[in-house]
Amino acid sequence: MVKVYLGLGSNLGNKSANLKKAISYLEKYVKVTKISAFYKTEPVGYKNQDWFLNCVIEAETEIKPLYLLELLKSIEKKLKTYNFLQGNERYKYELGGKDIAVYTITVDTSKY
Image 1 (tube, rainbow, N blue to C red):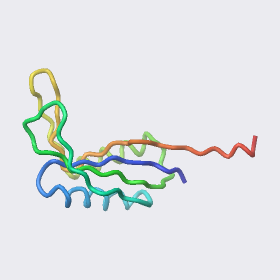
Image 2: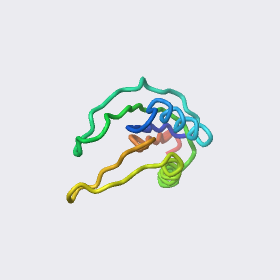
Image 3: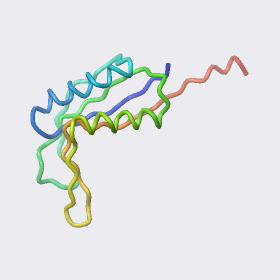
């Protein structure tokens, strides 16, 4: 099992419920071991949107990084993400956006 840290964020509707729903989806595929407190954060770039509610989860998984990214994208689609353009910049309204914050791999060097 590999330990991963996933950043989650929502800035639409019931933000807390959206994060809990995203975590619930993730628990079907990874073993969630810790969930941070939820933090309210100001949007960056396009300021004319609601503040975000964010958290980080620690989880263990055997899913490879690129497959985990695809899984996160599929969950994002289920929770619906709204992309829009403001000038030349692209922004998102997120119901449950997810990012891979850290993907750690521990190697047992005693075998070498």
